[in-house]
Amino acid sequence: MVGIGNMKSRKIPIIDFKPNGSDMVSEIDYRVYQELLESEEKFRKTAEAAQDAIIILNSKGNISYWNKAAERIFGYSKEEALGREGHIFLAPERYHEAYRTGFSKFRETGCGNCVDTTLELEAIRKDGTEFPVELSVSAVKLRGEWNAIGILRDITERKKIEKALKESEERLQDILDYTTAVIYVKDVDGRYILVNRQFEKLFNVSKDQIVGKTDYDLFPEEMANAFRMNDLIVLDRNCPIEFEEVVPHDDGVHTYISIKFPLHADNVPYAVCGISTDITERKKTEEELRKYRNQLEELVEERTHELKQINEKLQKEIGERRKVEKALVQLNEVLKLMNKNLRHDILNDLAIVSTSIEMYDEIEDKKLLQNALKSVRKSVELIKKMRELESLITSGGSLKPVNAKETIEDIISNYSLEYTIKGKCTVVADETLSSVIDNIIRNAVLHGKTDRIDIKIEKLDDYCEIRIADNGKGIPDEIKDDIFEEGFSYGDSGGSGLGLYIVKKTIERYDGSVRVENNKPSGSVFVIHLKPHEESVCETVCVKDT
Image 1 (cartoon, rainbow, N blue to C red):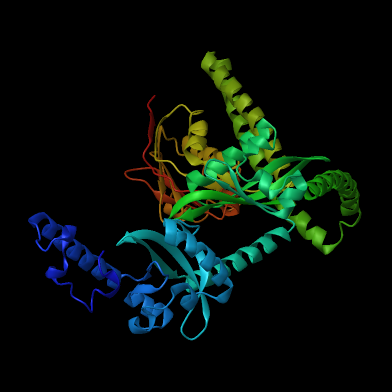
Image 2 (image 1 turned 30 degrees about the vertical axis):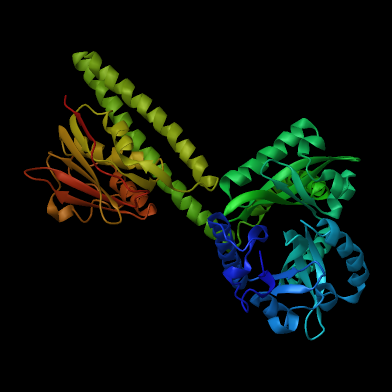
């Protein structure tokens, strides 16, 4: 690199180039010379475009090259810098003695402590302020003498960032160290990257000892397996998850609530951070509270039973009070309706029994005895059912979902007639719905003299409609409004006048309604509206032909 220190201001004439001391220039020597010139030009363009300062010191330590970045960084122009002793000119005085010692060796050998390495030092600008630089030095031999090429980068901003980062890390570490929670960070392979002081204290390990280790180096294998599994779940789901973890301590096993979440770099998880809080005492307290609560519940249950007995006694003693009277009146109304239903149904069944026995005496047909026996059994089942219903009502039982289709099938299958059932619906009712259906069907058979019944169940807007149609004698229009009144009876076949009254009262107790219509060409249609319990699709058809 001939003339590199002043190559822009001075052109090197070809006649100055005399290889081997001869005035004659060979073709090979000329080519080498041209390549040197081209190399110098490339270096100059590259150096001038560089963002870092590029400075060359000759064998005397003087500046022989100074690029534009050096002008910007140090504040000196090229004219001010060229020829100055670089180290004395640009370095703080505290470096001067070391420079003189080291450069003397460099001048002779091209070697030194600063050569082929990168150092962080202080430099001085033109205004006298010191600033940090990153210095890389290379040695190059020009014209038989060692020159130093230095590349300097102003790292002022980087140092500020590093300082701020260090302060931030120190503040973060202080926060981590002064919390009572256990905080730690593990990489994706389960190796510890960071722990706080509480972690060190509880597990008798320092930061230096734990970094790079895994849970298997600290805890029993079973626990380590559990911790690792939880970490892998967090990495797989890539979101925060809360775990309850069991950890051994000197005084026994402790329970922790651990919040674990992934840490990301470029949206890729690289670690798992955990914040664990000891809840051992809380768990013990909760267990104690649970025991006390159970004991208290037992005591309350015992006391409630005692109070219930006392209350039952008081209810009898203060039966004259208005509130109790009202409750008793309401209960008596229900029981009254039940008793009427029971008496009515049993009397009807006994009538069948009596008629069957009388006819048997005349014609000795065993089917009559079977009908009588069937009616007796039916009455027994009815008494059992009414007892259950009475117990349900007196104990505070409420309405419930009832499958209307199944209820109707159970009742109508007891009669010897043709029938069809179309549709289905679940309604709000209770066991008494069976008596409602039985009353209507029995009336159609006994009083209407029907031999066929067609039933249609349909879910409409906000109610379920049950249509029970027979082909019997029908009901005269002039009594249609009276048949549901208590005690109403009509014609020679009229009964006690309670059956349809009970039907009406029961349906009203379900917040429903009932009415009767004419059937074509003959017979009657009883239309019942009840509250639906849920959506039902009327699609099943059940048919029995006798």
